[in-house]
Structure formats: structure tokens, C-alpha cells
Image 1 (tube, rainbow, N blue to C red):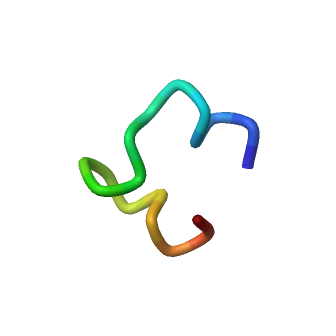
Image 2: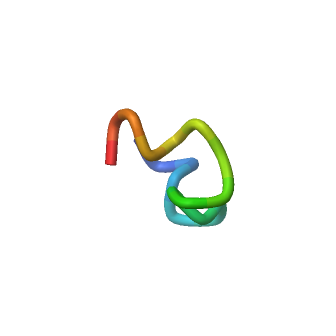
Length: 18
């Protein structure tokens, strides 16, 4: 989850955990 801070949730699949 901490990597979502550096990556934009709307730009990567991090949005899933966002």
C-alpha cells in the first residue's frame, strides 16, 4: 500500500487497493 503513495492510483492498478 505504501507504493501507492509514489504512484498515482488512477495511473496504475494501485487503484484497486486505493
